[in-house]
Image 1 (cartoon, rainbow, N blue to C red):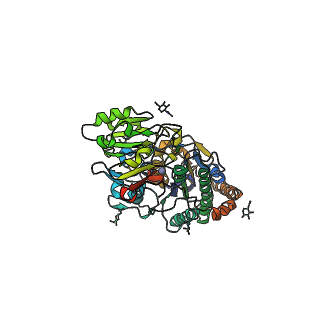
Image 2 (image 1 turned 90 degrees about the vertical axis):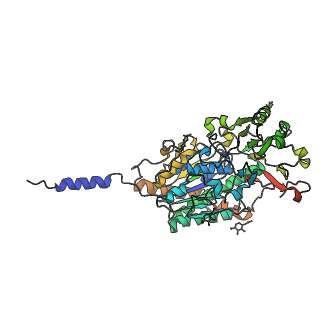
Image 3 (image 1 turned 45 degrees about the horizontal axis):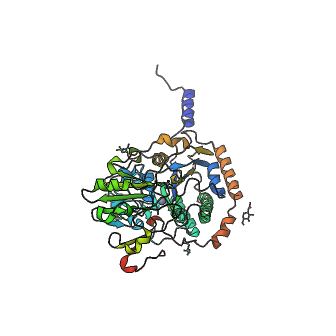
Length: 490
Ligand SMILES: *[C@@H]1O[C@H](CO)[C@@H](O)[C@H](O)[C@H]1NC(C)=O
Ligand SMILES: *[C@@H]1O[C@H](CO)[C@@H](O)[C@H](O)[C@H]1NC(C)=O
Ligand SMILES: *[C@@H]1O[C@H](CO)[C@@H](O)[C@H](O)[C@H]1NC(C)=O
Ligand SMILES: *[C@@H]1O[C@H](CO)[C@@H](O)[C@H](O)[C@H]1NC(C)=O
Ligand SMILES: *[C@@H]1O[C@H](CO)[C@@H](O)[C@H](O)[C@H]1NC(C)=O
Ligand SMILES: [Zn+2]
C-alpha cells in the first residue's frame, strides 16, 4: 500500500512552517556620527530627544574608540571593524615621512591612497553583496577601494560650516529620501559637531552645551522625519561618534610640554607631526633613534614609545606607516614642538609657523574616560529601553553586517559584544506590541515638543568659534611669506 500524505498532518506541517521564525526581512541602516561627542555630554544639559532614544531603543553607557582617538583613524575602525594597525589610516593628515609630505585633514578625505590599503570598508563589502550604499560627509566615504567607489558619496567642502542647523535637517531629509525613494540599504551620515566647538571653546564651555542641544533637536527632527519618510518599520538607526574631548591644560596651571626643550627637533628628526593634540609621531634621523627616545623619555607628562615596543593593546605596532617614535601625552597635555614665546623666531620645517590654540582636544589614551564616546540605536531590529554595558567601537562593524544580513569581511570585532542589543531572531515583536510602541513613541516625541527647536532655528546663527581650528589639529599652518607676524585669526 502506498503511503499517502495525511491531510491533517500536512496541514499541521504547513502551519508550523508559517509559525516558525522565518528569515527576517532585511531592514535598512542609517549610521550617523557626531564627531567628538564625549560619552557624558548629555548629562549636564537637557536632552529630551536623546533621552527618548533609550526609551525606544538601546544605549551603551559609553563606548571605547580604538587607540588613536582621532577622527579618521577611529571612523575607519568603525566602518571596517579593523584595528588601526590593519587599516593603516594612522592619522587625520595624510603624510609621507620620506618626502615630508603633509596634507590637511579635509584634503586627505579625497585622497584614495590614504584610505585604500587593502581593507574593505562596509560600503564596499555590502555593495559586492548586492546592496546599495551611500556616504554623506562620512570619513572614508569619498575614496576608491581597489578602484571601486561608494555608489553615492557627498564630500564635505573645505570651508563647509559645521554647525548650520538648517543644513543639518536638509541633510537628514536628503539621506532619508535616498533610503525611502531610491532604495539605498546603507547610508552613513557625518556631522562635524560637537568636535568643532569642543576644540575651540573647550568641553566645559557653555557653547558646548548649546551645540549638544542643537544635536538633540536634530535627533528629534530625525525621528519625525523617519516617520514622514515611512521608514519606521524598515530602518535601523545607529548614532555614534569617534572619540571624546578633554580640556587642554595651559599655563599658568601647568607647564606646557615644549619638546624642543628636550631635543633639537630640527637636528634630530627628519619628520614629525607634533602640535596636533595628545598624539605625536616622529622619525629620527638615521642612527639617532635611541638618542631621540632617551631625550623624550626625560620629558614629563607624556609617554614615548618605540614603535616595536608599543603595547599590544594599542593595536598600532604592526602599522607600516607609523614612524619609529610615537608619543602619547598625558590627558590634557598638548605636544608642542616649540615654545610659543620663541615662535616668532622659529621656523618649523623651515617654512611654517605653528600656532596651537585649541582649548579642548583628543588623541589621548583610549582608556581615559574623557576619550570615551557615545552609542545609541533604535529601529525594528533593536531592543527597547535597553542600557548596554560599555563595549569597544570595533564591535559596531559585525553588528552592522548582521543588521544588513551580509557576510562580513575579515575583521577584529565580535558580534558577541553587540548582539545583545538586538531582538533575538524570531523574537520579532508581535504586531500588537510594535503598534503600541510606535504610538507611544509618537506621543512622547510630541510631548518633547520641537517648537523650542523651531524658535532656536531663526535665532541660532552659527556660533562660529572665533578660533575654529578643529580637525586641522588646532593649528594654523602659515606660509612664512604670507605671515610677517603670526595671528590667531585665519
Ligand atoms: C575614483 O575613481 C573614479 C573613476 O576612476 C575617479 O573619477 C575618481 O576621481 C576617483 N576618486 C578618488 C577620490 O580617487
Ligand atoms: C545654512 O544652510 C542653509 C541651507 O543650506 C542655507 O540656506 C543658509 O544660507 C546657511 N546659513 C549660513 C549662515 O551659512
Ligand atoms: C606633570 O609632570 C610634573 C613633573 O613630573 C609633575 O610634577 C606633575 O604632577 C605632572 N602633572 C600632571 C597633571 O600629571
Ligand atoms: C585583525 O583581523 C585581521 C583579519 O582577520 C587579522 O589578520 C589580524 O590578526 C587581527 N588582529 C588581531 C590583533 O587579532
Ligand atoms: C508644540 O508646539 C506647537 C508649535 O509651537 C504648539 O502648537 C503645540 O501646542 C505644542 N504642543 C505641546 C504638547 O506642547
Ligand atoms: Zn573626530
